Image (cartoon, rainbow, N blue to C red; front, top):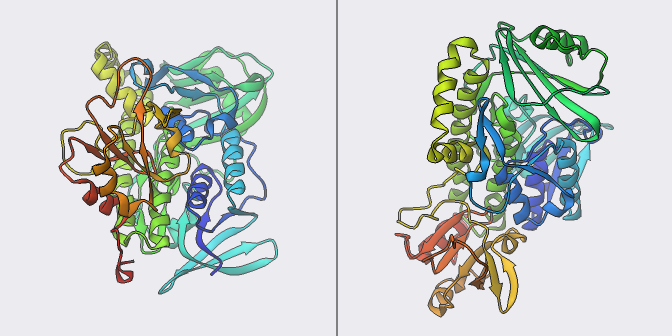
Length: 494
């Protein structure tokens, strides 16, 4: 066996998954067709949930000082993200190249193997493994793994080779994007509509500006490469009257409003993550952030199955949970594309939505959608509001030492947080102590306590609450069994 897991694609989804698997001690090979890391900015922001996730793995410091913002939008209608709870805010103007560098270094430090210039061409699922045919600088060769993960983007070879259904809608409109330097461009952070189309612009680091243009009635073109800069500049001038043709283009790309999602995130020993599983109109940069969350959801589950501590049914919850998240993603980005690209006939909708966002509950709902905080998984019934939601950041004291609920997740393990020094709770979890950390802690700090009235919390490695007491209709051993495997798993169930 070449590795327990082979990942196709060294973008954010593939690199995060590699790191998550290595935290659990799983050997992994990442195959990337490009010979070197991308220098392209691509996705330029980190949503609040992604910032939280990176904090839960101790990665935030690696990004240096982040420029954060409480300003967002839904289809061009401004949103105040400050209505959301927690200490973290979205990070603006972080180029994807920086994000990938941080994630690559993290994965390599943990022992992942990244092979660049290696392209997955086909694969064959066998009884107990997957045989992957790979093009390398030295010719084709076959690698074998227990599982193959397609994190190889919207044109995924793994998805196509496996015959995954990819239903949805084809793109009807083409938009052009360019990162330019050497000229000042007035910010249009939430977009600006005109009779002819839409323009957006945002300042990036190093004197670079990102501009996006979408001219109404422009269908997608068949392209063998990126657009030429004069296409961007000419369209910009038609829509704004401003001349940017003298700028130096740093990166140019085109995208459409196509929206598709695979019917199944898993087929046997092959799974898809990120853009390989879902493509959509890139409103608010949700694509990269959702892709990262796919991998964080998948990593600990796949590792537990490979270690033999959990049955295959745990891996099935990857599709159950993330397919629904992907469906909601396509719904909200589809609505935003109508607001942004819909022309004057969509103006009444924009006006009504702008009126509704004056109500804080509406703003909070939409802000949570675009920030990744609205996700709630089905972990079983019960009145405790934490069930299935992300674990909030809480300052804690453990044996007199300061820590937090965020810091307790750095190792990528599950955590049973005992907030009442209850030996009964700890005894009930004792059979799982090699799979989770059992921590007795006392909340500290001032202000509202999101754990008020909760005496114990079971947190999954991906940061979501699997059980909370009081308030869960499952008892603690049942929740531990469901998410971390039976205390004594028969080899026949593995």
